[in-house]
Length: 281
Image (cartoon, rainbow, N blue to C red; front, side, top):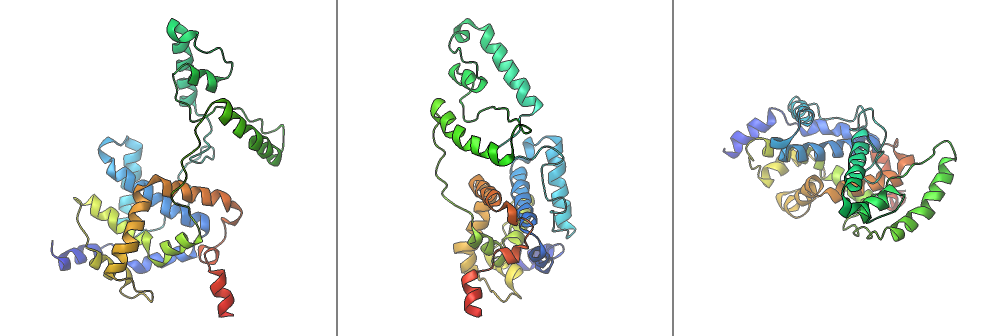
């Protein structure tokens, strides 16, 4: 497809000015916008193996984008009505419990595994019996027995002890840490609309949108002009890293946990460069 033809097709649904609304979002809402695009892109890559519910979510994302509905943060969560969770802390579900029950039954009915471990603690028992390569631990937290602050202090002491007792490896050092500078880049480089363009290309027979065309669509009327060279070196690699490297989303989630008290702050206020603000004064 010629550049002029491709641009015409893209402009039927893509208007970068719509994305100015992102600057009115809170930090939490901004997180959801980035998260939704990461999830949608990863569902798209796995579309042939998606269960029906995930296919429906993918279709919803696609149709909203094509209708020009670029904001997904109205419900501020992708988790539905279930208990809150993060990538690092997940309440046990019924399916988890059923899996554990089946594992315990399996161990107990096979002579070669039934005597390997005598531990009363399920996480240790499953690991020592070879059923589960343990990277998690199943615990009960008695929420009405202590305050949130006291429970946190208990966990600060217990988690290092559990890791030592269960001989758990330390997590890999993060190669990337989210901070205000990353959030500023997402806004200034217009990476959210760029991710929508990348999604559209992948969703339409892997149509290649040149960086020069992306630059024109994203920054033609922008005060912060980003040319093709800048997109090639910085913007596009960062957008693809966000979409394809799970560590970026995990790091963003870490950042949200650390800054939870600021989640209702407007994103543009949150990312202000304090040094620059002082200099301007």
